[in-house]
Image (cartoon, rainbow, N blue to C red; front, top):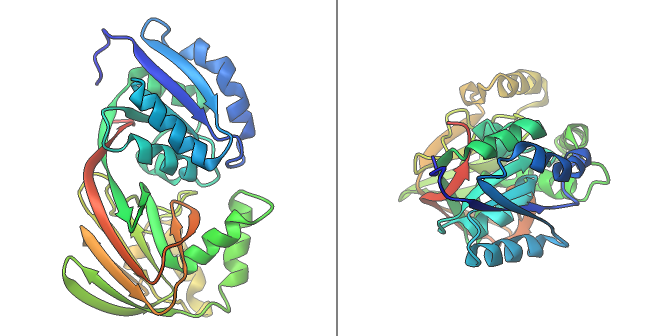
Length: 299
């Protein structure tokens, strides 16, 4: 808990193009003075012009002495702002306004705007891990294979939301071919053919779709989820396990905890990094940064 004596400087950084929750963003300006303690906080609001601006604005604010930076958007927005906050004494807050909101779901951060602002009011701070993947960074989840393809298609879809996400999965799944991966997990070599491999710092992709039921964001590990392609006849059973948070019970899923991972694949392909598709090459180096980010979250 941050000391209630000092006045804390807060910057709300809004990504105006993220997600489907435009009403939540629009109501933020009105609700902030109604809910935040004006004797304890001094706040400003910045609406970013681009994805690059999210990082640059946050970095400048921290250098100027801002105590808390609140990301208003989805996991991609949290990624860019979180990257700037990581390793500094500043604190990250989240007002979920994206599509999947995976990190917010994992941490129990309310989707309701009033309750989200109340959480910031109390400034309960938790230290969480972040993860480097080559020269990039993620807080929640990254992945290769079918996972990355879905992220790419979703990013270019005209419509956001779960129905669009689900439609892409069901359309692309039948013809997608598994690939071969070589993984070095804390020095141990594992070779697998898989539909996708996810590196989970949290338990889910978003939408409460739980891929790593035992993942913890503050244990110094990522859960490496190696998922085989499920024969079509068995997909309802596996989807049922996924929705019941028991996907780890499936014979088609293998989960291994590791602090550091090196992955080699046959071709240069996309990587899903906190929901954003990126080109990162054939070899990936993933490493956990323990307790590197201060974040406001329910305790």
